[in-house]
Structures are given as C-alpha cells and as structure tokens.
Amino acid sequence: MKFTNDSEVRRLGIFFFYDADGIVDNYVQVLLDGLVPHFSELTIVCNGKLNNEGRNLFTRYTDKLIVRPNKGLDVWAYKTALDSYGWKILSTFDEVVLFNATIMGPVYPFSEMFNAMNKRDLDFWGITKFHKVPQDPFGRSPYRYLPEHIQSHFHVYRRSLVSSTYFQQYWDNMPPIIDYFDSVGLHESLFTKRFADLGFKWDVYVDTADLEGFSYGPITFAAKKLIEEKRCPIFKRRSFFHDYNDVLNQSVGNAALDLYEYLRDHTTYDTELIWQNALRTMNMADLVKNLHLDFVLPSTIGSPLPEKKRIALILHLYYMDLLDKTLSYARSMPEGSDIILTVGSEENAEIVKQRCKEMPYNVDVRVIQNRGRDVSALLVGVGKDCLNYDYVCFAHDKKVTQLTPYSIGDGFAYKCFENILGSKELVSNIIHLLETEPHAGVLTPTPPNHADYFGNYSSKWGPNYDGTKQFLEELNVDVPLDPNKTPIAPLGTMFWFRPAALKQLFEHDWRYEDFPPEPNRIDGSKLHFIERAYGYIPQANGFYTGFIYSDHYARIELTNLSHDLQTLSDSAYPYLRATLLETCHSVQTGKSLRGAFLLWTKNKLVKCPILYHLGANIMNIYRHLKHPHDYGTFDRTSK
Image 1: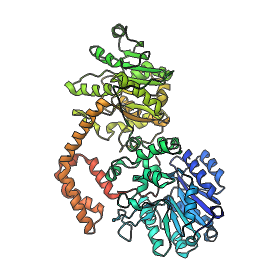
Image 2 (image 1 turned 45 degrees about the vertical axis):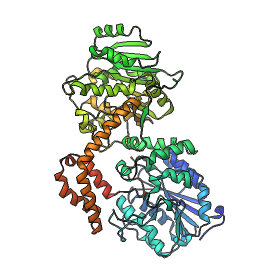
Image 3 (image 1 turned 120 degrees about the horizontal axis):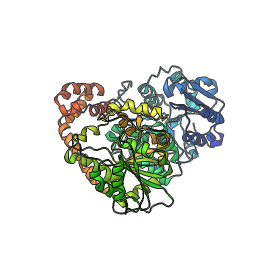
Image 4 (image 1 turned 90 degrees about the vertical axis):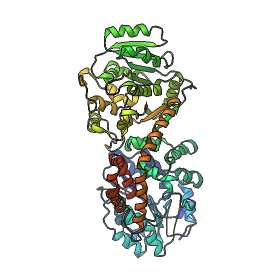
C-alpha cells in the first residue's frame, strides 16, 4: 500500500502524553505544530495529571482529549484511543499514527518524511529502529532474543494492517502492561517481527543499516549522525538524562553533547525548548554528565569584559593570618568591581580596611556575627544586596584544621581559589562564560578528591538528603531530587553565580538565629543543607549548576582522577575479568544475565574487599546486565 499525494492521505494521529506534574512544555506544542498539518484528525491521550494550561493547549488541536489514570503506560494509552474509535471507523483511515512525547522535533519538516514514506509499498512503518539484540534482558521474548524493531515513539499503521484480523486481535487481547519491562518486552520489541512473520511489509524512514554493529539504538548513541547525515526529523528527550552507567558501557560519552551542539549551531531547532523541559523535569546530575557541564577556561588569555554589567566579589574573612593570601586572590577581580568583605569584629574590620586602601575596587567592609560561618556571611551579611548585581563571586578563607591537617586542608582551599579567582584572565573568562551560557546559574569547582576527602567524592548524599529536600520545600523550590544520584553543589561553598538564579535565598529575611550555634557537626547540619541547595535552587529558576576549572588546575585534576581510576581498576581487574568470563559462559548455557550476575556475586564478591566496599559500582554492573539498552518505549521517569 502506497500513496501518490500526501494531501489526499486520510491520516489519524494518536498522541500519548505523560508528565508527572501535568505540565505541557513548549517542545510539545512545536512537535504537534509540525505534525498536525499531516493529520485529518488527532486524538490526544494523557496518562495521569494535566493542568489547566495543558488542557487548554491540547483542546486547540483536538476536541478528542482523553485523560486517564496512569496505568498501562503508553501501550494502554494507545489501546484506549483505538478502542474509542472501534475497528470499523479506524479502518476508514489510510494511516493511523501512534506517537508520544518522548521525542522532540521537528528538526526538519515532517513533510520530507511523509512524502518519502508515501512512495513505499508498506503495511506499517516508523522513523527509527532498534537493532537486533542477541539476548532477552526482559525475559519475555519467545525468541530468546530481541528482534530488530520499529521504536514505538512513532508507529504508523496503514489500512492494510489496521483492517486485518491479526492486528485487531493483537490490540483486543493486549495483556496488562505493568512496567517498562512489560512495555518493551511484550509489545515494542516483538510487534515488528510478529507482523512481519505474518507477511506484512515494514520499513523505517531513517536507514541505519550502516550502524548495525555500532549501536543497538542509534537514536540514542548516534543521534547527531542521524540528524546530520540522514535528516532524521526527531531526537529523544532521554538523550539528556540517560543513565550514565549505560552511556559509558556503550560509548565514550559524547552522544548527547554532540547532538545538542549540532542542534544549536547547525539547525533551526530552538534549543531553548530542550532547556525548558530539561531543567524542569530532569535530575541535575544526569544533565551535568550527559551534557558535560564542565568548563575548562584559560588562565593566561582573557576575554573582553562586558559593558554595563554589575559584578561583585563577596569574600568572608575569618582568619587574619591568612588575610594577605586571601586578598591576593581578590585582586583577580576586574578593576572597578565591588568587593564586599565580611569580618567578625570591629578590630578585624580596621585591619582589613587598612590592607585594602590601595586596591582599585569599591570596597565595603561589613562586621557580622560569628554564627552560621560563611553561609550567614552571604545570606545575612550581604543578603538582598546580592540582587543588585548581574554576576557575583562568593569565597571565604579556609584554614588547616585537625580534621584536615598540613597540606591536605590547604589543598582544598587551593582547588577552590585557583578555579574561581586564579587570575584576572580566568575571571574574565568566567564572566564571559556567564554571558554566553544564559542558563548557567552557578559555576563552581568540583568537590575535593585527594587524601581524606576521597570518601566524600562518593555519589552519595550522606546524612544531607532529607534535610536538603525539606529546606528546598520550605523555599517552595520544586526540582527533581534523587538520593541515589550525585549531589550537584558547590561543596566548598565557593562559586560564581547569577543572583537571579538564587533569588529565593536572597528574597528570604534571614537572621543569624536561623543558623546553628558553634560547634557545628561535621555533616548533617542546616549549613550543609544550604550548601547543597545552592546547586538546586537555580534549576527551579531555569538555570543549571556547572563545574569550572582553570586550564592550569585541569591538568592536576585529570592526573588525580586518572590515578584514582587506574588504582581502582588494577584492584578490580581480576574480579571484573572473572565476571565477564562467567557471564559469557552462563549466557551460552542458557542462563539469564541476571542469574549470571547473581552467581558471580555469590562466588566472587566476598573475595574482593575493594569491590565489596564499592557497592554502588557493583550495582551499576547489575543494572547494566539487567537492562543494558534504551528501547525507547517511553521515558521511564518524567521527573
């Protein structure tokens, strides 16, 4: 079955939408605007919530809007829509198109796709396919492997298929779909082969035969290539929050960044649509990793400074014996900047004023109370005054303590200062980055990873998750948080920021009594909750938190991380090699990947103390073996 003229094709669109908060972002409107001209009729099915704005938007496209309980995922949403028509009416359409909000586009006009596919003699088709997987990680396939299949984010059924008894019975007898594994294992991965074996002809618009053996899912791991070379009109939301363990198991980690930069620099697709949805619905750790929100900046070659921007340094000074060293970093600020210095006594204020007399800045020395440390210095000592500036750097002196003796504690201070105030040129480049990256809200050095700080480099929140979550709720900040994902925050409380990104903090009327008196706990206090909240409040305001390195310090950081990784890899190698060998043997003898992993765990894990204590990394292996690929049925979480 094929067509000669797209305008004569009677086409029904069925759009499945899900958002945890029932919010319809602008990318959905752009997607519908691109497709609706090709439909004779549109039905929209929403699982779960739908707010009034979303409802009003959808009713502009159709008077057939179905809002149903969030059960059965995308499969039963589609079934609900199909059932609402009945097979007699459905068989009057030339094509029935099932698509969902896990895709973004159009990058290119959908007319190109429909015109090309109209000429092909087919019974059903899609945009992209998932290549054959030799195992069945879901344990549901009658074939004991996953056949190549059209990805269900865009299925098109022609009348020749819709009117068939086989197709109608397939949907009439659809089993309950409980979770993602059912959706992929019982429907998406089997649909194409099932109907191809019955003699129905199928194809996909984007030919990825040349990527067979390169990636099971090119739409995820070769997205830029599909768009640049094959004019694929869509891409996946999941590209920007894909599980990074799986990313590194299948690639070097470049796919999402390559995709984003190509869209931004070489297409007319508005990348603001990506940011709007990503910053509202995705965990900051996933965005930082997939989009590589790490910026290495020159420390010897500067950028022109913007005109008419108000720039300030807020510097908390506690240790007078470190004053000269700390002020040497302050001199990296552009001349004419405002510098607000907070101190704990009138005596110290006089000392500081004398040391700053000849500095080419507008210096404001403020006496504050010694309660709340650097946090109260920023929020009470300066507070709402921050809102007078476009860009602000916040820093404080750090001293060696009993917990971080000798050069260990000094190394933490060095890392923080060198990456935010290491030179005038570096500072000019940070300001330039804020100018050119409009969604950058907080820019901070990464946490320390040397000496006794190594344990704190873990992806865990420790005792700080619940308190941070509660603190954000008190500020009416609603962002995706996950205790199992790395906290993204300035864990040295030294960072550059846009005051607009942290406005909830500065609009609050803080008092010194809001902060715990000394002595403070090492971890798990309100100071630590606020420290982590610095990284998440920007997200609620449309900004991200990213990491900055001077080119000088990046050399040190890369060496440190490489050394640590190699040390862990050397320790783990014999056991990881055993895992691979035993897993391959188990798969060859018919055992499931999950069973193979559990067998290895029982036999090997207890013999390797390092891996035993790196439980999170072991679970990453398990998760990869359990579901190694993204099958594109839908985004498993919206938030």
